[in-house]
Amino acid sequence: MSPDHLTAHRRAVAADKRKIVLLSPSLEAVSGVSTHVRILFASALAREYELLHFQVGSEGRRETALQKFTRFALSPLHLALLLLRTGAQVIHLNTSLEPKAYWRDLVYLTVARLLGRRVVNQIHGGAMPADFFRGNRFLTWVLRRFLVSSDAVSVLSSAELAAYRKFDPRIRVHLVPNAIDPAGLAGWTRSCNAHRPLKLVYVGRLVRTKGLFEVIAAMTELKRAGREIELCIAGEGEDQAALMAASLQAGLGDRIRFLGSVFGAEKWRLWLDSDVFVFPTYHREGLPYSLLEAMAAGCVPVTTSVAAIPDVMRDGEHGLFVPANDASALAMAVAALDDDRTGLFRMSGAARQRALEHYTVGRLADDFRKLYAGCLA
Image 1 (spheres, one colour):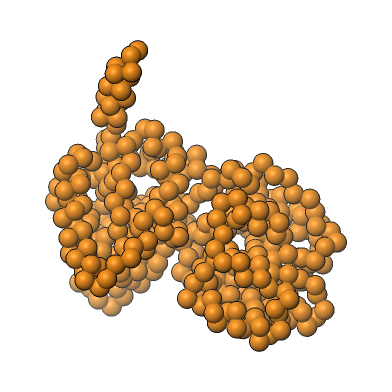
Image 2: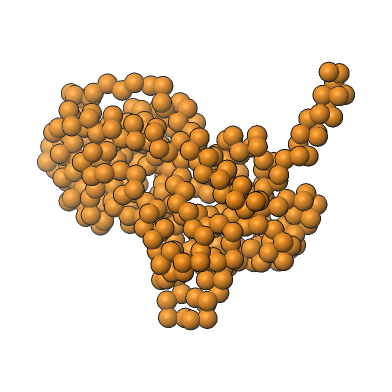
């Protein structure tokens, strides 16, 4: 086949693909939703469908207040023009039941519906639907229409699945947990850390609701008890300066290292070099990528039983659950793992197996392939 014929053939194949528009912040932004959409673009879905990106939100942008207002006002029109120009038949919203995201994406759903497009509405955490506008019947009715008019609604946890079905049985809701690409993690074997100081790690946004100040307090208790335990904190966020000050004030400057943001191979090495992922969050999580990455690396989670986390791991088998806002309980859980390195190694293997069997990109692509096919049918 000549180069011209090959180019024409490729164009014909591309033209035959059904087009899906995925809405998210910038693909370069450091956010869970941006990570999710990048994973979908790199998956087998991109070979079966033509995936198009439409940027929403302020993450990954540098703009003045006027530019932000102009973007907000014109963005629905830009989406309409994209749908008309490309002929895309499905839009894939990535939203959450938090006010800013919900009201923005309600407008986008309305635009898609007016143009006769199908809508996959993926909910990334936030409030449960019955609680979102509790006490306001009209706004609850609007929320119900937002969900019922979607061709498919996907949620991250079994608790959300039950809550959405109870809220309105007409909602076509599906359980689609997050997933990761374990390349860079799965091929490495881990040896049991039987004698070295226990290495703790946190990777994520540095905000109070992730339980990070409780981690500092737990480290203080562990040091007071004479335990040689190290902690690396990777990430950035609004509470970074306060956390660093709390660490120094507690006399933990020799025990805690703040690494800033880490990516790619540097992040994989950090997971593989660490024994325990400390994550006592009380944030309204969806399904944290950091949890899945830690488990795939065999880094045992010590976390709280919130949102989708109980779907992923079982207490005492893949890691340990601790109560939220309880630094002493966190310190006790870490001390228990420090004393039982054989049990820690057993949990490491179980956590890794769990992540690599159920939370990889292949499974995620299959789930959305079914949702897209159902919409297009």
